[in-house]
Length: 142
Image 1 (cartoon, rainbow, N blue to C red):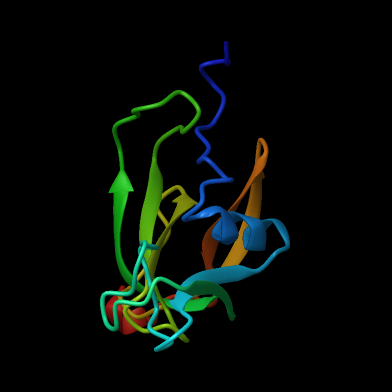
Image 2: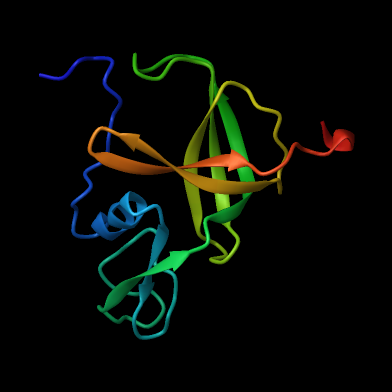
C-alpha cells in the first residue's frame, strides 16, 4: 500500500510510451516519429496517420517550447499536490503541433507565447519532464 501523499507516476515501461520516459531518465526530451515519412506521432500510436506505416522511432528534441495555454489549479484533488499550482501546455519549438503538459508551483506570471525550457523531475522511479519560464513576461502584457 502506498502513502496517500506519494505523487502519482506514469507507467514508464509501456510499449508505446516507454521511450519517452527512458529519454527523460537520460535528461533528454524525445518524441515518437514515423520511420517512413518522419511525421511526428504525438500522441504515440500504433501506426502513422499520414502514411500508414507501422515502424516508428524516437527523436530527441531540444526541450525548448512556447507557452500555448495554462490554468491554475485551486482545488486540491490529491494530497501530494498542494494548491495552487499551474498546469502548462507547451508547444515544442522543433516539433510544431506537438504539445506537452507540465506543472509549475504557485501562480506564476505567464503569457501566451512565452519561452519555456524543459527540466527533469525525479518522482519515485519515473523521471518527468517539467517546464520553467526562460524569462518574465513583458510588462505590457501582464
